[in-house]
Length: 158
Image (tube, rainbow, N blue to C red; front, top):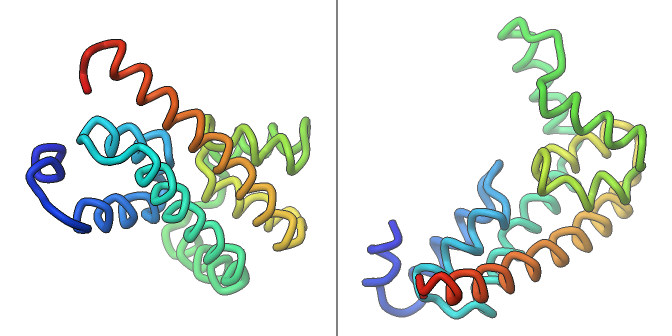
């Protein structure tokens, strides 16, 4: 994939990066370093990685009720009655640190999409969840972009 990105011209590598960032379970921890090591502009990669990941959080916030109903039906059909390991971990963070702690730790532990769903299912307002997830994504995107640029250049990868 990195070779394809390096060989592509124009906007296509950035579109692919945006789609990867918008995919569930792919956070800025993967997308930003991938784009930077592929030789794309670090600032553009950070902005596109943030935008793609934030789009998923925004859509989950807007369509939470519909998604929750679909997920409940899906879990019942599959016979899933217990919480996943990630959901349990996110719940412990929620209990200890509340929404701000969950939002800021989510990309490290469970992912922003799962954290947003958990926060919404526990009764947080859409507005607060979207705001805290935006703050968290911005912080982690900057950290990953700077870490990738300086880390990869130090290791002579880029």
